Image (cartoon, rainbow over all chains, first blue to last red; front, top):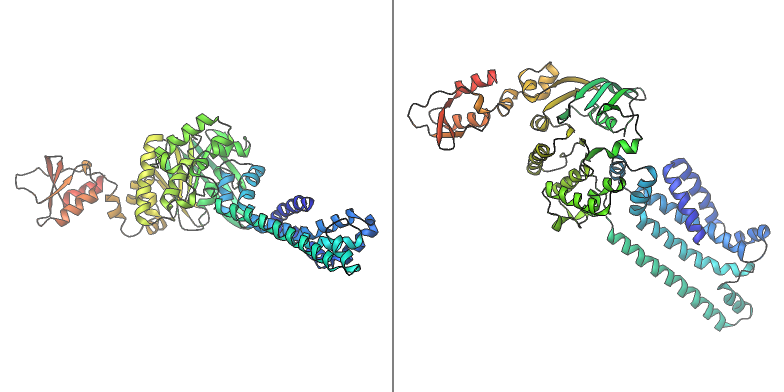
Amino acid sequence: MAAAGVVGLAIGVWAARRPQLAAVALGVTGVILTIPSFALFGLLTILLGIGNPAVELGLALYALLPVIRNTRAGLGSVDPAVVDAARAMGMGPAQVLWRVELPLALPVIVAGLRQATVMVVAIATVGATVGANDLGQPLLEGIRGDDRDAIFAGALLVGLLGVGADATLATLERGLSRSRG
Amino acid sequence: MISLEHVTRHYGDRVAVDDLSVEIAAGELAVLVGPSGCGKTTTLRMINRLVEPTSGTIRVGGRDTRELPVTELRRSIGYVIQQGGLLPHLTVAENVATVPRLLRWDRARTRARVEELLELVGLPPAEYASRLPRALSGGERQRVGVARALGADPPVLLMDEPFSALDPITRLRLQGELLRVQSLVRKTIVVVTHDIDEALRLGDRVVLMRTGGRIAQVATPGTLLAHPASDFVAGFLGGDRTLRRLALVPLRSAELRPADGAAAVERVEAAASLRDALEAVLRSPDGRAAVVDGDRVLGVADAEVIRRAAATG
């Protein structure tokens, strides 16, 4: 998730600068998102073998789309006059990005991270089918052994994790939009 | 202080600014005015290289603007835009401190400078320093914009339509404020506006531009009104340019009729303009107004006095 965050942010910033690239990046990540998780994990295990790495890579790929899309949208929503004024005062391109554009785009970027996180938590459970050691495991075992308690416990945990992560990021998001224009 | 030498800017096939040359002296307030699309904003933005000239040379303080790194150049030139262009996520104080921070001034010096500037533009720091831009009125934002542009005490100030988004009353007040601030700081200021009244009110000199990025006339407001160089200039100034010029000529310059004891009904201060005097004359039942300096009557003005003063002034 963290990896997807960083990579997605970087691509998002890049994409915001070049509209053509943005179309490509969103297209590619959009296609990735339509691949069923089971199939994607399956494909990746062929490359990386059964276990955690394949699932982690898969999840990172899924998380890219919302992160890139929101980073780009966030940067796009910054008032051009404000950026113009910042440049006119003698800020270099990096200073404009770090001191002006990213802070102003932050609420939208965090919203993207939030979406990505919730999605990843849900999809991660499928990872257990290809041997990842995660919360999908109790679910999977429960289903195999027809153990309702295990299914329930697993689902509850996944649910709590998802809701918890969502709530945390939602609070952050609200806090950010409150303190900023 | 600022010189543009044969400056041209193309956008593809379109010529925005065409072989424009003009000199702006140190401490002068020059106004670029003209119809929309005449290249006035492009001209302004070439001075701090937000737009690069296609050809020609621009010097600020004698130095070619291409000699310096662009960020360094811009930090030495204040820039004010419509609605202030403030950074919405930063407080008033942080906004004003932008350039001092870029120049790595120490904290104490920056803080002192911010307070000084907020005082200068009439915003008490205690009340305004920690506010966010969205908690300000349009006029207040514009003042912060001016304070920010003066941040590191640059010798040059560029203002792009600074008052256009304000209501007429606030606009008039801020124009007055700008002239007051200018009388204190004596910067070289270039203002862009499409409003000829604003140009005539603010400018020591007015650079009147016409479509195609060419200069129609460069002159003081008085000369512009008295001797428009072309039909285009006369047309842009409007049909009432004689009346407008009266507002620029001080009543002091008029040769008054002696006060003959018959108390005139209307009185007008000698410090006023010919326009104020005309107003008083027209209001007066006998067409005469006493010109006074405090309690002292200096003489009498009537329509003929004003006409003669306007012809010479």
